[in-house]
Image (cartoon, rainbow, N blue to C red; front, top):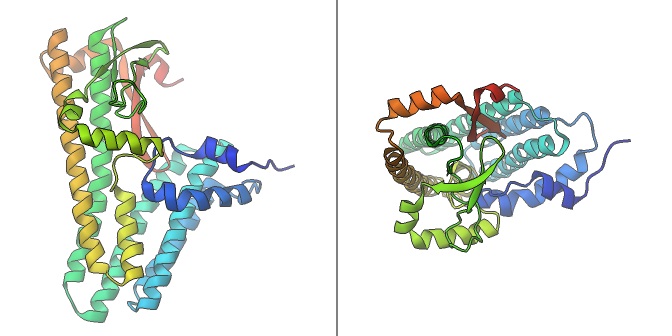
Length: 335
């Protein structure tokens, strides 16, 4: 008999600790109920939902290409449904334990292709209707920013992982574990969202080294807002790739203000990406100071120490997003 899940179980086992506000408010309530409906069906698989989301994305693009408002509105609704299915594949994978590395790759690649196809269709349809070449430039902006956002996220994750493993190796056995989880505990008495301890690569709890102190000292008000958002399961990166897509492919077509919402979303996404880059920059400065205190004076030396300690980076890909990896001894990395 097929297993049935309650909404409470689905929320507990599939909701991310922090997610985009669009997902938390406008997707999860519907997606969780649809997951409850389809989860008992064995033929409903994460990869099948990923394919379904992509096909709906193509249908949305076909509507956008028509250019008229009615078709734009239909395309926007289909795009939102496509995103709901895209969220459901990860929930089904987590709920039933049926996720795979290939599925994560499929999800990620199809997401990028969906944005590419919809951007060309939406702006191409407006150009065909109005003859305004600015729509073609906006298509290029959408494609570039979507590419930059996700490439930047992948590279930032790699840099954080490199800093973590090098710092952990340089500190050696029994030293404080490095911390790169900016929002570990929003209720911490320090009021900065920093946990007092962390579990290291050996499963031992140790004091943490916080590399984000410089950023928080300069943006105290932002930290307070961040902690408030975290309590609502909303991540502080308020305008990410998700919100960018929803503004461009849903709000723009629904309001028939495509250029306005595209420009607005481009400005907001760029601003938040620059904030993330600055945040990473302050973390790298703290990391360099900490290495100097230990006696490691160069990145080459830090890498040599990590290699000698047998600590390597392990990357995790879930739901098409590159997550912060974990550093652990090489001997355990392939277990």
